[in-house]
Image 1 (cartoon, rainbow, N blue to C red):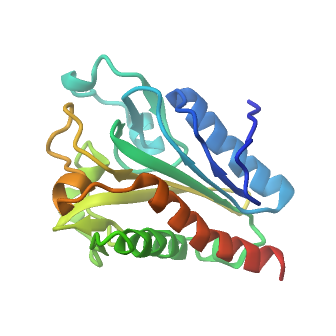
Image 2 (tube, one colour; image 1 turned 90 degrees about the vertical axis):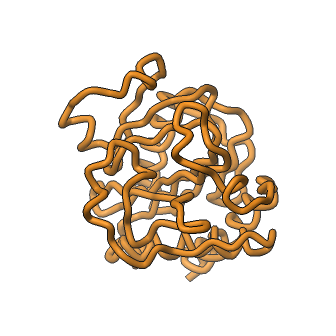
Length: 224
């Protein structure tokens, strides 16, 4: 699938038009392939045309029932692992790192780098969030990703608002994740930043704050 990244800034992309779940997953896979072939870093922010459920790669392989409340939603499978994500009132990103990049040798470092960029960009808006710092293994059987607990999760007032997962291919790494802005009526137990912080996130400001920080990372490597 080809797409016109008309809002490209170097290897960073901001999708202005919400897309279907199938389109979004296809573009993420395309960026991973481009990282492999072109030996470049690609970072993308995007939205969803309609409420969509994405299943983690291994979760989808295992099968099992989808809760009745999600039965009428479009369902897609992510390249990465983890639990199901309801893409509704949230912001999604993806990051593709080529095999030659040092971080591809230690991909878990990507979680901390990307999540720190979000933490710092949110702090500029007076919104305090932090990484969990510990595993909650007992919760890893939950169907929804945002009810699970990884040490790199970003929390606001003790609740997970940002989570990410990865997929490796030919040494390159695709990482994508979601930031919950508001609770969806379909999953009210997963609250968003607006409710938890008592402030409305300025999405444009957040996006460019994160892109600026990660753009510096990309530029420093590509110019090395």
